[in-house]
Length: 249
Image (tube, rainbow, N blue to C red; front, side, top):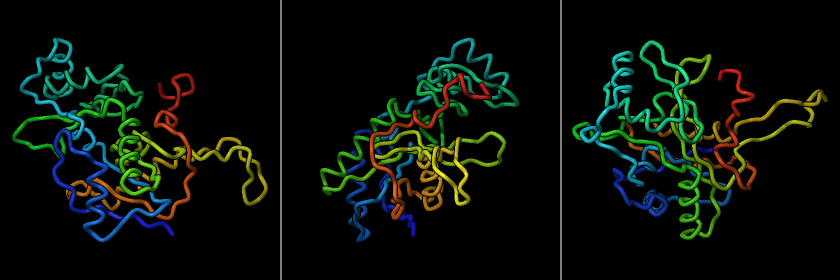
């Protein structure tokens, strides 16, 4: 049986906060502790805050190109400028939506630049961590140092999906587990050999954890307990198609 446990009582994260320390402490406060086999799921937003990946719009001077796109999309030119700085290229621009490829290789809306869960009066935006896999690894190492247990860490962000309504949490950073479960070469229950099935288990775990996080409840961390993950070295890039095989780029 799989259980999803919200980590309650996390404070409003500030630059320099040690997330691994805080997660262990807050679990203790709710009379819970890590068990071997747990997986820690952490929202990108608090990672970005802890790493200082927050920028005030007041200090942004938009380029002429950003001003042009802002006019086409109805966005703040300063917001667009930050989106462009965080992107490798624009993939699609239509009906006020700006889909980009980030420098990490993620294809998503607005390069992951977001104003939610940031103090409104400060008119600030959060950016994705520079190295989300590295961020996940640092949190994992801190938890291991404090508890003696090797607990995989997944960092998540909310993306839209092709063909489907609604948003889902996806893994943007991974440490301590294989993010893809490869069934190719195995047989299904009727004996058919599977040739293409690869399950994005890190994304599935990210989406499952969001069920107890919610956007307004102040729960940016959850534990997934009971899933038999495959330990090992893995990174979020393992979940990305290369441009050569991506049917939509």
